[in-house]
Image 1 (cartoon, rainbow, N blue to C red):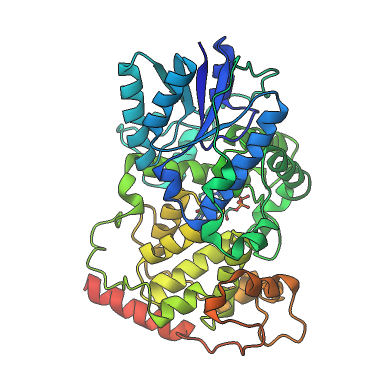
Image 2: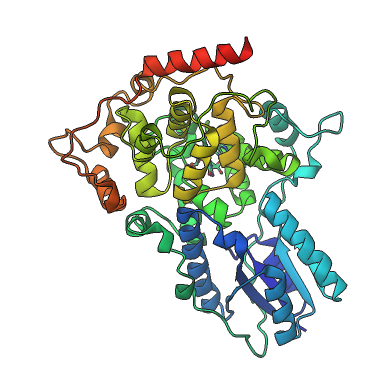
Amino acid sequence: SPILWWVRRDLRLADNPALAAACRSGRPVIPVFIHDELVAGLGAAAKWRLGQGVEHFARILGARNSRLILRRGAALEVLRALVAETGAGAVIWSRAYDPDSVARDKAVKAELSADGIEARSVPGFLLFEPWTVETGQGAFYRVYTPFWKAVRDRPVAEPQPAPGIIPRPERWPTTDEIENWRMAAPMRRGAAVVARHARIGEEAAQDRLGVFVEERIADYKERRDFPAANATSHLSENLTCGEISPRTLWHAGLAAMDAGKAGAEHFLKEVVWREFAWHLMWHSPQIATANWREGWDSFPWSTDETTPEVTAWKQGRTGIPLVDAGMREMYVTGRMHNRTRMIVASYLTKHLMTHWQVGLRWFADHLTDWDPAANAMGWQWVAGSGPDAAPYFRIFNPVSQVAKFDPDHAYLDAWIAEGRARPSATALSYFEAVPLSWGLSPDDSYPAPIVSAEEGRRRALAAYEARSG
Ligand code: FAD
């Protein structure tokens, strides 16, 4: 009888343990992607990007004489229906580690097993299963550096090639049409603009990695902090959809280290930041919804998402050029440079005294590389409320950061159009992407700062001292 391969965030053929095990089972393989309530609840950009990935992967499977069956509904019901329709005796999938997926998957496994169906989950999304990394006291890690030291010398299996043949069933079950899922709808005008910047699918991801290792990894450590430098891998959108495996990145990094490329170890460290984020989310799932450290619940953060200040932040109209450049980069490309992610997050939580949850939600709606663990860790780190966080009083100065990280204003010029005689094409594309209802035009004058660097710093520190005193 066939095996159902429940395809989730593992949209790849190579180094895919779930697919490999399905092929080895000796059964015909039926790949199925389920649009369930967790997919329905995704932010606009993340949903659009996943939809693009699924559509692309369906074509790839089609070209391999296989097929991706698309179904909508609660996962358990869909899988049960497919078992009944196809006579499948087994279901396999690649594990997820966020609390909602964990709860769903546990229930699915228990119910299918009770039906007499073999239900199995396998690793593949992470290098190290979160429960296998423990401190000497048997606890989980709350600080990055000891986590890095605990894992850096662990053996990581070599990535496996794509299976030669994906055995097919005699008859295929029916499938939905992905267009009917309308996964781009919440993006409105933005989808066409963001699409120019997305690199979708396994082949694109492998190409990206190849170019990065060839041209940029050697200088990664020195250049990765400069937002205009194009010095990083841009693989986050592919990793979050599973279009490339973390083992592939790991071994590419190790090979670059062996070849004497100086920045390679630093790249491995960043890949381990991703692991650390998932380690934290697995062990303390509330990281996305509650202050991780005690004492922060009483902090006077505003939770109002509709104040003029928050609106200006969302629209990239704070009058602080580096903050606005970052917010616009995200709107146009679906990504933002890590340095500017930290700066815009600091400006929101400190200068604008707004709760990190407000920012976390905005990012979840606008990032094509949205990853619940990295997003939550990043926001709580900047806000000061998270594990291993920057101390609250370390407030990024969004003006002096320009002199340090964008001295020739290449990044600002790429994203700010107002007041420029000849605005760049990327800066102009922002006005194509944003909702018409925002009423923005590149001919507007650039706003004065809504809260200046100095005033915001004073306010934030006063609130912090009032709290701790
Ligand atoms: P590279 O520099 O090439 O790094 C390689 C890979 O390492 C990345 O693709 C990513 O998987 C991982 N990585 C690098 N830095 C981090 C980090 N600080 N934390 C966790 N993993 C990291 N990253 C996301 O993937 N999704 C998010 O939703 C997300 N939200 C963030 C929110 C805030 C407030 C902050 C400060 C950071 C956030 N990050 C997030 C982390 C980081 O900014 C991105 O991973 C990085 O910019 C992606 O670019 P890249 O692929 O070129 O990274």
